[in-house]
Amino acid sequence: MGDTTTANDVVTVELVEKVTKKDLNESGSIEGFGPGMMATYWCDVFDTEGKHIGTTVGCMDILYADPESGHLVEHVAEQIRLPDGTIMAWGTMNRSDVLAQKWITYRCQGTSGRYAGLVGTRTWRIQSLEDESYPIVAKMELRGA
Image (cartoon, rainbow, N blue to C red; front, top):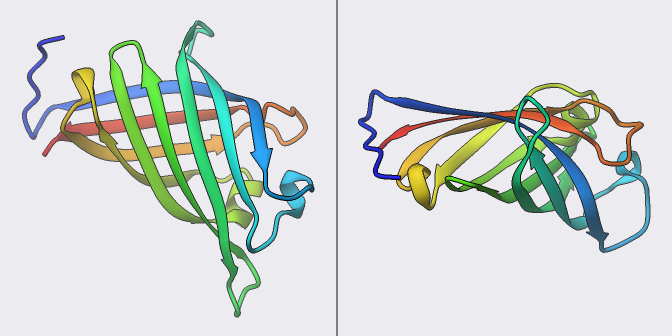
């Protein structure tokens, strides 16, 4: 790998993820989750041309319902394994925005390979709630610390 990245260099990773397996702590649909709902999920990762390039493993936890809006607040932590390294991503979001298929952004950090030591953001949105693989399009932008 041997790439060197300075603070001004940006590494951009664009991909599509599809859920292949999920393990929930209670039954229910993706739209019917509530506080205390937890899940682990596994995804296949594809490049923008559709070639399988890696995997994602993530955990989500619905922390609480906002008392003013009633919207659910969710925390996610993910590990994205790609051929040239691994990226961790984590953040807290409004579940209503996820279900409305809005763009979600939170922090990410490279942990191995060409991404080691880089930090940035992961931005994604669900493409379809009808498809049980809940395909998402994602973009990560990382730069040297």
